[in-house]
Length: 184
Image 1 (spheres, one colour):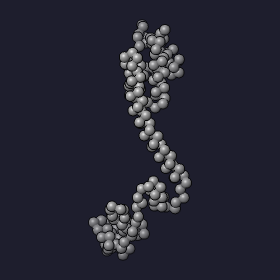
Image 2 (cartoon, one colour; image 1 turned 45 degrees about the horizontal axis):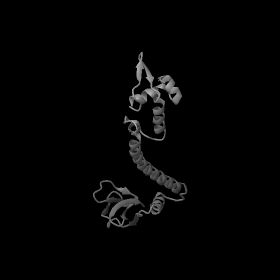
Image 3 (cartoon, one colour; image 1 turned 180 degrees about the vertical axis):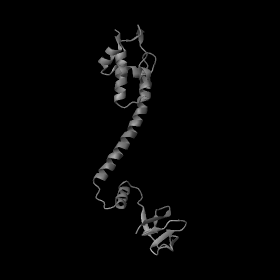
Image 4 (tube, one colour; image 1 turned 180 degrees about the horizontal axis):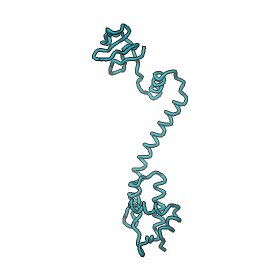
């Protein structure tokens, strides 16, 4: 039994343009033509069903092409198994990222912190990451000088711009120490 593009599209529940697109993308074999019109073999609907299902569950065009690519009679299962194994690994990674995102959203939705610093430290602690602590020091210990233009200005050595109302502070981490400036 053969059918034209309109009938194939109607039976598959897609527009004829989708059928043409899948042909151009190499997901459907080029059909025979009669008087310039596409005439599809009986197995075209089954193949299109596999293509549509693969696309609906998240396979890319390239992955779907490998899935339904031309293979010898009776051999699709070996190709499908290899593609399935690769896609399973990708899905496990995606599920891991989705779970991490869900956990982060749950943490954020229950946040009662009064500042970004407090929130960040709590998130780092819950994630098991080292918390960055600050120890403020006097300007002369941090390599800063007082600007001649204002007694309340603080300028870090090497900086050409005064930092009014701010004091230098040292971030203390287990492996390194660096100078930063925080609001006074």
